[in-house]
Length: 136
Image (cartoon, rainbow, N blue to C red; front, side, top):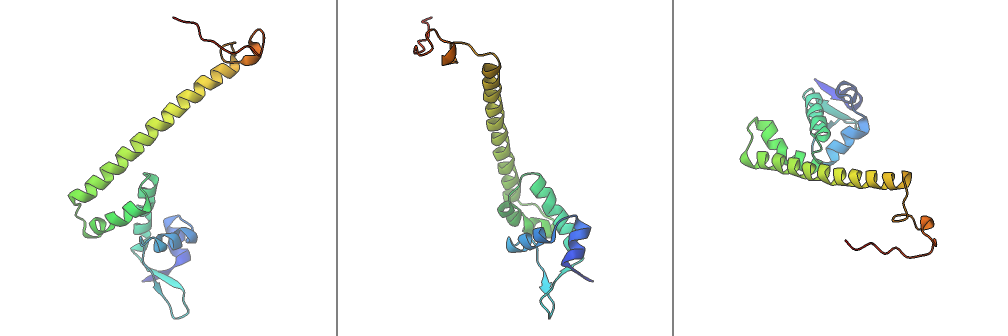
C-alpha cells in the first residue's frame, strides 16, 4: 500500500517539509503519481523515525546517508561503526567547548555581580588609571 506525504508525516510525527528535505538529501525515496503527488511505501514511516533518531543523536544527514546501506542490509560495517564513533568524538569535543564557554560566562557573571577595580576601570582611583597587575 502506498501512502501520500501527509499520511507519512502524520504517522511519523514530522512535517511534510521534513519529508521533502529527506528526499532532497537522498535519505528517503518516493514515487510520483500521474498528477505528480508523492507516494511512499509503508516502510517509509519506520525509515523516517530512524532518521529522526539519528538527527536527535546529532548525526548530520551526510553521515546518515552513508549509514543507509548498512541499515538497508542489516549488517554494520567497520566503516559504519567508525563513522558513528567519529560523530561521537565530534559531539564530545563540542560539549567540552560549550562547557568551557559556560565556565567563562560564569566568571564574567561573577565579575559583573561583584566588580573590583581589577576588572572595572570605573572603580579605579582615579578611574582613568591603567590597570597594572601586582607582581607576585
